[in-house]
Image (cartoon, rainbow, N blue to C red; front, side):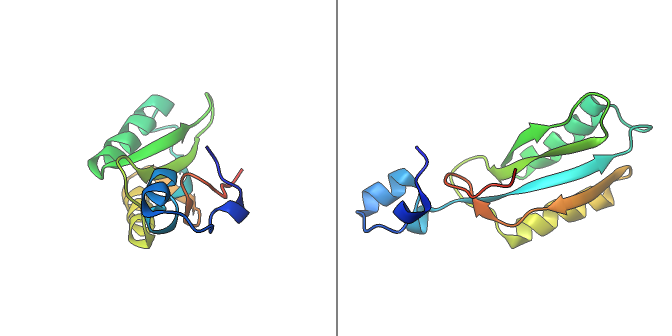
Length: 120
């Protein structure tokens, strides 16, 4: 269930706020786009390397890339309940830039995982 922006701030019981993941239970994530060196890695190898890092941080990644493309993009969030923060954005960017053959193109702003707004 996705709530309208106007519905996010209605007065609700704690139990309902938790169920709807609003208020103090809101969870944040961010969009990310990066490039990999297609001379060094296949799409599957690059994605495997990225997912290994993501899972080591207990994050989840939804996204991927197209065949013949050297760009991967998607959305990062916590795997279990919880939220990502600015430190997590910086960690992802730094990891990408420290890996040979990877460069971070863009780490999006933090956004609500459940209710958006999300970047297209």
